[in-house]
Image (cartoon, rainbow, N blue to C red):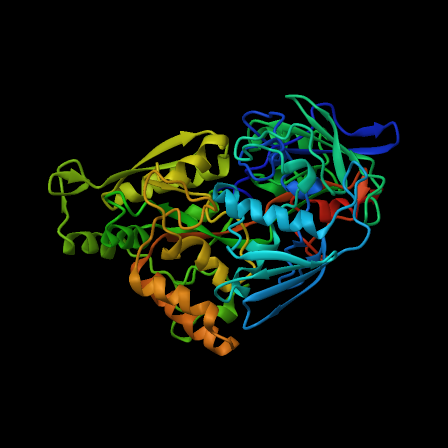
Length: 533
């Protein structure tokens, strides 16, 4: 699920920024294979992708902060609290919120939205935990869970809220296109075409309204064309990788800025139900044989270091004592010895094989993601040096998520996809066996697309929510880290950043390394802080 790591979102701008009839319009650039008039916030590959952040229209309870960790921003929820050993979550809603059509927003809308996910699990893209939800008062919503669920806070509060009165008559929300969305957001749909989406300011917004009048989103085919649009001043804002940003972008104007705060770890993500990556010996050999500095350098990233996979230094406090300062080892000779010890024999073609089958697999990713292509090209050469054949399997932006969700791949890159604002979330998203789905059955939240299964790990993930102290939680996390190190369910290679670029020629107020109040990937939190230059 390539979001911030690669850029699932789309884009904007073919004619540049300008002024609308009632004020300043800025342009956002991104990627899309096909911009269609589908705004259902519970579906993949919709027009909301071009906005990078669907909450311009449909808002969540809380905006989770992935840069200033822990400083999450109350949104439709004014406040919240956990009780009953973290089995009850009570939300107090904001006052005077209205839908775009002027009708009042209420707790019934929140209850309905979450009940919709329970009735149609395929819509639960955020991985919100299942539980009972009710409204004891007009501004209160209470979630009741069978098990402690505080560790899933970010999943729970990120669900987009829709209007009950409009959606309760929808016969099949899993196929509903929602062509004319009515949300509570700071912006609403102004104009739509296959070439661009114009969102206009909601002048009756429940918070202080935006100082910019509109945002035009236009799709581009790949990172290179987005970079060109930014350099040429055709776009004001984007959230995708720029190769050699200092040379190719920021040096072109004092108004041009690029920021990629380290947000997560990525690498080779295997399908553990397909040979040869189902063999841990092969995974260990790959981990030993790759030169991470070269892989990372191919896209200007930092090589991963910690054997735990946790991105450092942000998660240093979560690293188990036994793994403090224990780095990933790189040793080509040891990589081949690992394969030989597991019964693999190098054939005359230079590749290892076992039982007549060559150690060969493909890596699937969207062709338009040039930064991933650059890394994988490096891997092809490096793995050949240790007797493993890697093939490149390119696909489209719209195709990659459905394929990985169903398990239709050997390996991929560009996942984990989103910043993980909690140490536990990092592992929960990528290797929780309790989130296993068999091949052919899609994982609705894109968690554990590796299909990792292990009884010990499954039990640890069940125990974690039951722990009632930070010390007890860390002890369980330490054991999860041991499982990761010993079984290597995926192979960390580099730390990735939340790519963002912008121009201050027309607007200012963006976050940056000196003012890291939120991610600078296009989003409504930042849009509401922008002001004319």
